[in-house]
Amino acid sequence: MRRALDWLPPRLRHMLLGWASVGCAYSLGSLWPRRAIVLPELAVDRWIPFNPAAIWLYASFFLIVPTAYLFARPGRLLWLQRAMQWCALAAGAAFLLWPTTLAYPPIVGDGGHAEALRFFLRFDTPHNCLPSLHGALTALAAWALWDGVRRWRSWLALAWALAILFSVIQLRRHLFIDLSAGVALGLLCGLLAARPDTVFSFSYRRT
Image 1 (cartoon, helix red, strand yellow):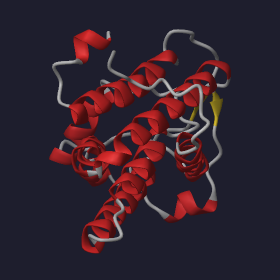
Image 2 (cartoon, helix red, strand yellow):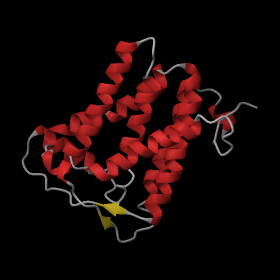
Image 3 (tube, rainbow, N blue to C red):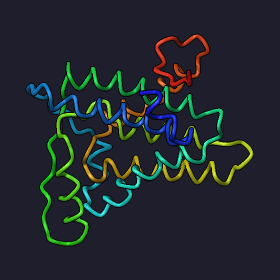
Image 4 (cartoon, rainbow, N blue to C red):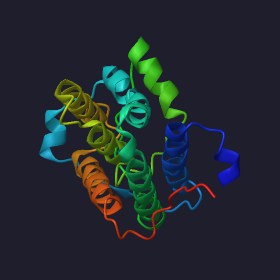
């Protein structure tokens, strides 16, 4: 595995090892089908109406994560990789032991937003709601991009991340309860990965 990744640039190698672990964890929920618990809708969820047009902001999640790996300071790359791997481990266990879902609203209409959402749902897993990996990785990406020197970039990344989190609820792929759990998981794993005495880190080192 290590030799197979030696040819990759360091940033891409860290992204592969971090983000791929999350993809594996996300797939665990479909390997062991169990009855899923339906998460409750809170008042904050009802304040944000369902809107298929949010699909574009929601899908920009797949841009903010590689942006974090490509533009974060070099010293944060291993930290970001480790934090994502910790998220994958914790979320994967939750998906297997306590699968959750929600009452997804029907998609009506034939407009571009609705068609894009239907296309996306072909690859979605409806039983991996809590904790939201969308929320966890978005929080980590914004954290990785935060830079006290480049303040304009830091605030732009934060605004982008908040817009993605809002779109998650607007699109009803998650509710406030599981999105909040995902953000908390991301921040907790970020703190854990930053500890110098972390042993179970899945880190990559050249031989």
